[in-house]
Structures are given as structure tokens and as C-alpha cells.
Image (cartoon, rainbow, N blue to C red; front, top):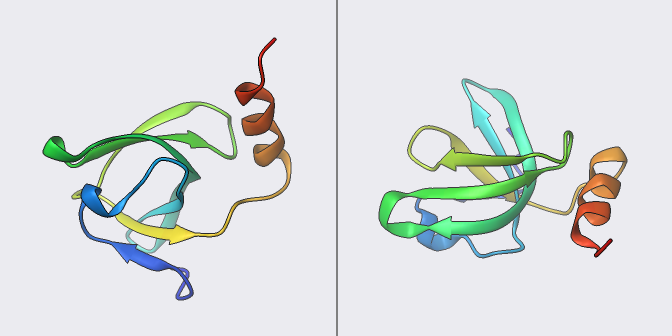
Amino acid sequence: MDANGTTIRTCGELATGDHIEAWHNGKLFHRGRVTQTIPLMELFWILDARTGARKLLDVEALDIVRCGPTSGFGAGVAAGLAQPA
């Protein structure tokens, strides 16, 4: 896991626009920008930096780390999806 990030323990610690990595058993599963939080259910949505797809993540099922914005292909996909057609 990235030791430079801030570990998130509850959904209430996240805000729309935060960049996170989601880890499980020491492997990176998802990386992206938070688009919506559901604190009562400890769930949140991200826009996956690799695929550009929305992902629903569970704070209790994964190790969530706040990190810096991603660069490369996924960041371009996310920016393209955010702009009006």
C-alpha cells in the first residue's frame, strides 16, 4: 500500500473530489476520484482512473487510501467524461 497517503476508516472522512486507492490483501484494485458518498451505508462512488467507469466501493470491505490525482490515460478519460458534449 502507498505509505504516503491517508488511510480512510469511515465514509464520513471522504469528500467529493478526493482521489483514492482501494486495496485488498495488499493488491491495488481501484484508483480514482470520489464522485458521491453514502455515509449511512459506508459506501461511495468513484470514477475509475483506469477504465473511466463508475465503481461503488465499500469502506468496510477494502483498505482505502487518499492519494494525489492520477495521471496518464485514466485521468484523460475522467476529464473527458466530465466535460459537456
